[in-house]
Structures are given as C-alpha cells and as structure tokens.
Length: 137
Image (cartoon, rainbow, N blue to C red):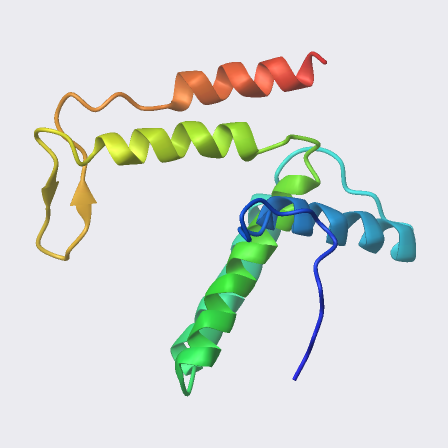
C-alpha cells in the first residue's frame, strides 16, 4: 500500500488538491526541463481526461472507479496550475453559483442533474474579473 504524504498544508484535514497538483507540476518542470506556462491546451487535456474516463468504464471495482475519477481531476488541476492562475478564488465563485441552483426555481431533470433556475446568474463575469486581476499582478 502506498503511503505518500502530501506536503501541501491542509485545513481541517481537507486536502488542497490544487496546491498538490501545482507542487507536482513544479517538480515535473524541474525534472523534465519543460515549463508550461500559458494557455489551456484543450486538445491535450481533453485527451487525458477521456483516457481516464475510459479507465472508469473499465473499472472492476469502486477503488478503480475512484482512482479514474480522481486521476481525471488531477490532470485538470495540474493543467490549470500551469496557467499561472490560482484557481481557488475562481473555484469559490463557481461553487457559490452552483449552490444557488438549490434556491427557488432549481429542479432535477430526467437524468438526475440538478438544473439552474431561470434567474440563475452565471459566474462567468466574476471569473473573467478574477482572471484579469490575477494576470495584472
């Protein structure tokens, strides 16, 4: 059994998954000499996530299902860490927006997805403002 201990500090035993992936990226860059800083590579990240979703389809048990889903998450967070953005404040905006879906007018559709109410306000403008703030630092 692996006993890897993350070096990123946590609060109340909640892992800082973005911080962990950023740490991985920094070590990857150091060991390989490759330094990704910039735009999101949609083709690359899409393929990596699809590969993990294929592993999910092939999973033999819950452990393999969890591994595939968290590996997909890891790829996404690692890729985002290479953009130079700190996605944690952006995550907070997305989370808040998602939680408002449970207010009046939110509903569950036929496949079980919780859907936003008609007056839902997308966090996109807030996200753009946060990205701009971070880029101007």
